Amino acid sequence: MVKTFLKGEDMKAKKYWLLATIMAVVITLSSCDSDSPEEAAKVEQKHKIIEEVQKLCSQYNAVTDWKQHIDKKGFGEHTYTIEVEDALIRTDGRPILFYGSIHDVVRKPDKYLVYFGSGWGTLLRNPFFGVFGCDIHFVLDCTPSQVEQIMRHPASGFDDYAVIAQISEVEKIRFELSSGESGEKVHVETSDVFMVKGKCLDLLLVADEPKDLQKE
Image 1 (cartoon, rainbow, N blue to C red):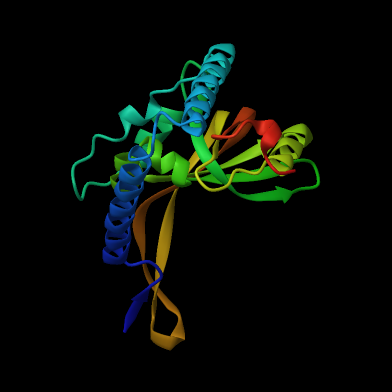
Image 2: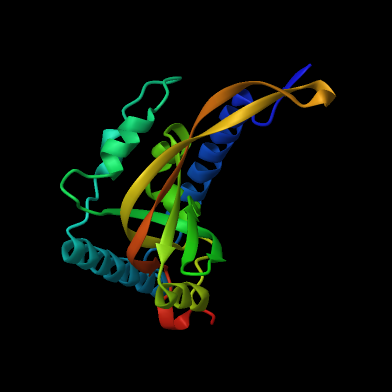
């Protein structure tokens, strides 16, 4: 009996459940008292964050609309590697801006690798891309000072990081199928999950609370 490590139908069911959860959260958040001092402070903080992210993008001349080039697929259509490459690895050499939560930090002999993926905050910014679009994971070379910033102010809950990244490589993840207990490899199933590698140029914690109030 052929078994697969990742079943397409399970992924679709999880994505629909995730979209329903996100919409429920959005409705809950929108029902809060927007006139309260706490809500006013959060709105002010969000405006401040938007300005800081815009400054980062201007400083590095970063591309912010790259998702528009790969989110126009119809239901059941695959995203191709060359499409993601064209969106992320620019012929003009410009870096990109993306939002993500940190899944892991790895120390190498000559560098640090930081793994970024979609968090709740990222999905709330663009729920339809996160649910129906391709799934992109970033693995970036980071400096010791960037890693120190991450360790001091980890993103949690609905917080995430705005990241300016220079992308150098795109790879689509493929899942091998095995036959019974023998483990014989049958063929490779292609998913719409991408592993993207590059260098982190700068990053900024995006949080409702100011950074100096985050736990260290």
